[in-house]
Image (cartoon, rainbow, N blue to C red; front, side):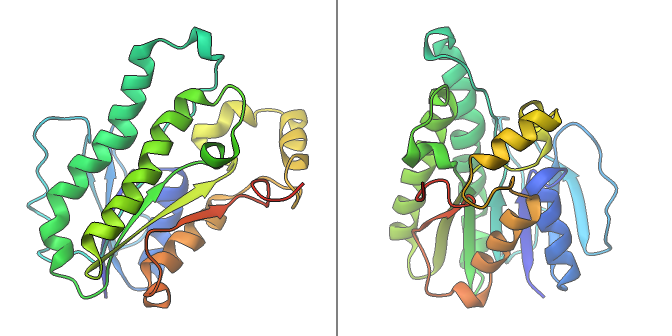
Length: 231
């Protein structure tokens, strides 16, 4: 049994991954921010956590963590001219600074594990370039740089990888998929002609956490229906 910490386990990809890891026999410590969660599985233990707070306490976690997955994010798609600098800062604090503070808090626990791994999340928009994506791409671009820097710094003890999905059917993307017309149009943009599911992304995360990925670190894994590399 491994111990995993999932920040943002209350919905979307984090919730799906929590259930998959629990079903596989692992112990999952999942966080929620606003809505108190009732575990779907006895191997999941939820607790309240706000990555934006100054003083973060994760001392109650086990002395050894096999992995941490940082899921919080935002999707704010607007013309560049209409985005205030404060909006970029808010996104950066949530998606980058929050990840940094959390990882720093649990590094000693990861070092106590034999096959420790960190999973972060980017977006296909960083390396592809999409209009109206400057706000999310700025923060997620930083996440990709952080992934490679941490992978180099903590090898061989801790593996660090990043998943860069395309549009995935999560509550965060609800406004982009709230009609049949939007769903069909977005599906057709992808060579595989469908929207990603939380299970698609969770499957990759589960693989990267496992011993099957023990020779993989510092990678940006594109799970995106082919949109980043095919026409």
